[in-house]
Length: 89
Image (cartoon, rainbow, N blue to C red; front, side, top):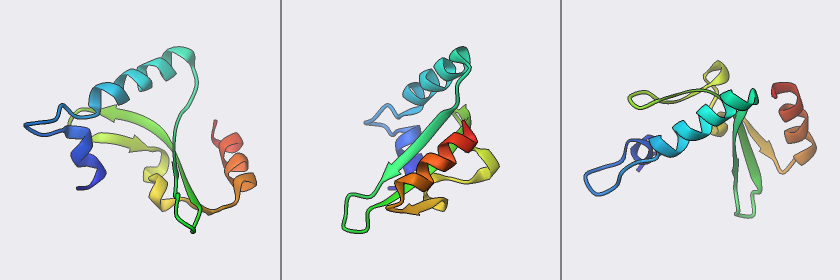
């Protein structure tokens, strides 16, 4: 399965849209950015990061400049992650 499969759900699973939608709405009301970070727990220790710009039940998650976390990887470099976060908040 790919991430969008979890987002939309299936006959046996509701899907993640309601969870993401409430987070996005909360971020808008608080006037803060909604970020998605991923962490590789293998020996590779890579981190991914993306700024979420939209949530749609049909289209899924929209990212700033169409860059998903898997397309912006940091090789176990938390200072670079922090730098990116500060530049994109």
